Structures are given as C-alpha cells and as structure tokens.
Amino acid sequence: QIAIYNINNGERFTTYAIKAQRNSGVISINGAAAHKANPGDLIIIATYANYSELELEKYKPALVYVNEKNQIIAKKDSIQIQAA
Image 1 (spheres, rainbow, N blue to C red):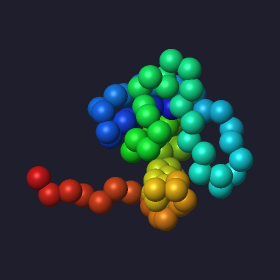
Image 2: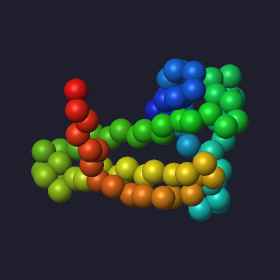
Image 3: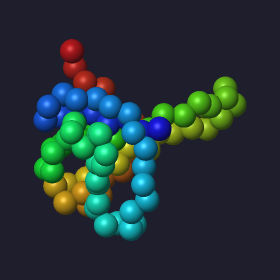
Image 4: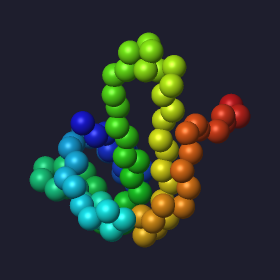
C-alpha cells in the first residue's frame, strides 16, 4: 500500500504502485484516484511497513526529495526537527 498526500488540494488516499522505467521521473495516478490529483500537483508518496523490535534496531527510513522533473536531489534518513 502507498499513501498519497496531495499538497495542492489536501486530498489523501491509498493506492498501489505500478512499476515504471527506473529514473524516468514518471508519477502516474490512474483509475478512480486520478480524480484526486492533477498533472503538476505536488504530492508526498509514503509507504508503511511492520517491523519486529529487532528489525527496528537497524531500521532507517528512506526519504527521497525530488525537483520539479522528479529527479532525485537529496536522500536522507531522518526529518529535521521543526521549531514549534
């Protein structure tokens, strides 16, 4: 399962992934979900998983930041703490 958070219109929905060519930058939202996003919308794509306590000791999240062409510009394993 993949969660999509649309920054432009506030829509949130769950969907699935269809493999695209590696490094193509293709993000395509199809079917009924296509009514929740438009070309050019800024979206956050999130995946979730269940881990055992042992697995969590070694786990690091993978955060990937892209530019307007969906080209990777940064990879991180944590989110910077934001001031309140």
